[in-house]
Each structure stands twice: as C-alpha cells, then as structure tokens.
Length: 218
Picture 1: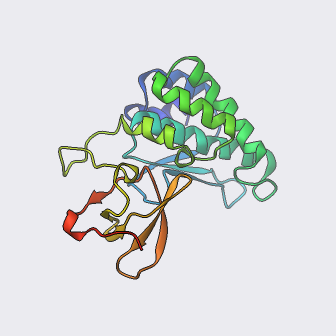
Picture 2 (picture 1 turned 120 degrees about the vertical axis):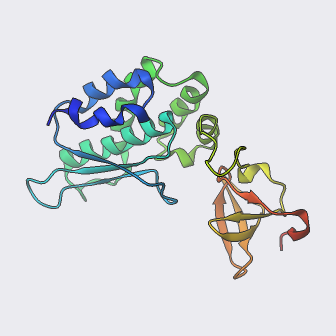
C-alpha cells in the first residue's frame, strides 16, 4: 500500500497545508499508523517491528488538535527513521541522533508556514534546545492549547495548573491535590488521599475545587 493510501484517513487530523509535505517525508516506507484514544502519559509512540519482515507501528492520540497531532507524528516518525538507521538499543531514544533528525524533519513544515506564528516560534526554540517533547516547553504547550476544541462535557476550557493560586485544591485524574511551589516547569502538589507529593506539569488541565476545600500547602 502506498504512503498516500496509508495516511489518507489522517487528513482530517492534520493542518491543511501539511499533506504534501507529509507525503514527501514518508515516501514509500512500510509502516502502520494507529489513531488511539487519549492517553494520560503520552501523545504518541513508536514500536519497532519484533520480527524481521514486520512493519513498525506508530500510534497517535486522536484527540489532539491538528498542530499537536502533526508535531507528535513527526516526533514518532523520527524514531522510526533512527531505528532503521541504527537499530534499537544502539542509540538513546532522544539522543543527539534523534534530535538532529527531528529538527531536520520539522524544517519543511516550518519553512512552508504550516504552523501559525504563535506556535512556530516556541516550536523553533524547543527544537534548538533539543527538547524531546512538547511538555518540556511550557511556551509551546501554551500556544498549542489555544487550538484545543472545548471538551464535549463542558462549554468552557478547563484552566491549567499554573493559572491557579498556590494552595488551591484541584481534581486531576480522579484524585484531589493541593497546589504547592513551582519546580521549573512543574509544581509540587500534595495528593490528599495519601499525603504524598507529586510533580504536576504547569500546563495540565485541572478541575479547581471550591475555596472551602483549599488550604495552605504544608
């Protein structure tokens, strides 16, 4: 099956101007792409073939906005190319080889202005720093979040953690936390069920709880 046939169903997930560039990137290589449900721990992944003649599998979360979807797809495609060149285990997953290839693959999309300026700028900066994921750049996460559609179960978008005052209680993944001090891009938050502290990214969407349930961090 040609690359065109393989990614035809992906058109609805991608920015309009990305299609031809994506075809050029993929060429005629053998691969499988799966669109999956939202995952809390990752936006996409790459699985190398287990057998000699098997095809590699890429999976992308289907709830991403078009720009986040494209960045994630190129990210995983860079893994595919690096694995084919070096074989798994011979280089670090996000080492210099992967970083350079990811940067090279993103350049045509940036050069053809596929991304809006407010996304392109932090994306370029993230690439220059060699950051492996969008979560490593709060600026990029913040820019991408502007293009997220409202969730089906609410009319307004949820706030992100960094927007809440320290000491606010919030709900995340069915657990209640208390927002604590900032540690680089994450906040040290105390889970009320066990009293333990967890590092939560500042761009995580959370459900703020009533003020009466909040208290100072301790």
